[in-house]
Length: 232
Ligand code: 3QA
Image 1 (cartoon, rainbow, N blue to C red):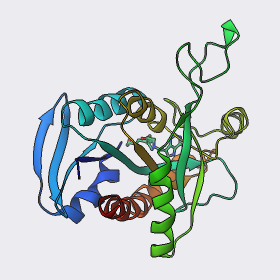
Image 2 (image 1 turned 45 degrees about the vertical axis):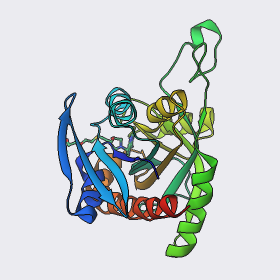
Image 3 (image 1 turned 120 degrees about the vertical axis):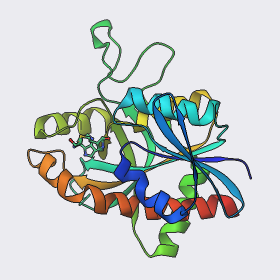
């Protein structure tokens, strides 16, 4: 089994994963810390990128090109768009889009640039495995579309626009950029998020209150995913 990358954006998103591993080697590279460990006989590289599309692009690329990761799993929190998603609920991305990418002045759809695509699809094999993980854990996980942009959305109108334009169920700030990198480099990827807020006017308060607990929910699920991927 080849090397697996596990990434988050914020320290809180990877802390529960590092805790679970106990021992790891830390390497500084391009302004981030990368943690390497052997887990059930498989090499892992773990990192938080810092917030946003640019930092997450750098980290995903580094994990693949420098550390040699052959699969990538992302764990973190997200704002809910779909009203059925509540704080702590888990969402697996089927496909992802950049909601702040806009050359519509030239007649292109939102999220599109020439030679790119509005959506990048996540690995179907890992999505399938996530259903087994959910049933093993007795948890419900929904599949949905995730929209990504360099904005902490705390506005009902913006949230609803993103939901409508991209048919998105949740939003965050890193998924689509990681997806673009993995797709370009042919690395299967899996993006899981636990809801921390509803991207509305209370979002910052909800986020502060639930970041840690939702990050743990996501991390626990992702580690069970890693077990499945290794056994698969
Ligand atoms: C937000 C984090 C970023 O990595 C994206 C959380 C949860 N709710 C969201 C929302 N809009 C967009 N994204 C999200 N993550 C960082 S801002 C807070 C930083 O605090 C997902 C996400 N509504 C640092 C302390 O000052």
